Each structure stands twice: as C-alpha cells, then as structure tokens.
Length: 134
Image (cartoon, rainbow, N blue to C red; front, side, top):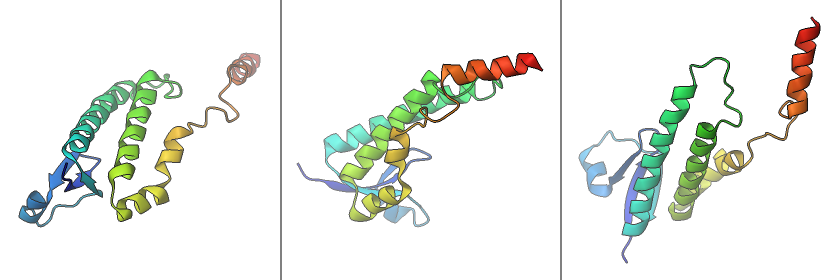
C-alpha cells in the first residue's frame, strides 16, 4: 500500500497533506510522517481520542482539593499521549524521530514518578498527622 506524507500539529489535533500545506503558505506543523491509509486512520483516531480525554482532565482542573495524581482522567490522557507519540515516532521522518527523542516524551509519559517520596499512603497519613498536631 503506498504511503503519503502528512504534517501533524498535536496541539490543535490537525493532519494536513502536501497539497493543503502548499495551499496554506503560513501553515505550521509539529511533525512530518509518512503513513499508509491504515496508519493515517489510526493517527486520526488517536488525535481525536487524545482531545476527548483531555476534556476529562479539564473537568477536574478547577477542583482545588482533587490532586491529578492517580486521577483516572489524567492517567487515560497520558496513555493516549504515549500511544500518539509512539505512533508518530514509528511512522515519522528522521527529523520527527530525532525531535521526539530530544523531547524525551515517551520516557516521561512512561514514568509518572509515583514511586518518588511523597506519593505513598504512609506519606499522606504522616502529613495528616502532622497537620493535626499543630
């Protein structure tokens, strides 16, 4: 199956082809990929899914007492972002792969730092006890 060049902007979730890029001279993009029709459809699905899960994290954001740590919406969003960047890396050009490697985003999304001090139930109980002693 022949592959086509596409230009991806993750923030707005857009995928453009070469003709569209030529028509929009000021169009900027984040990544260039070479994708088959199946890969293109998977990319569209992941971009849409990422946008949908991002909405769930926004719903939690204004609640001051609810931490994003271990929040199902945040974890789902991180999973979608990891899937998206894994696909972008797999079908990306050498420049795209190099950029993703420099960002280190795949490693960051795979390591949520929940094992660092301050995240265990004992740490939370200790903080509550310290607050009660004041």
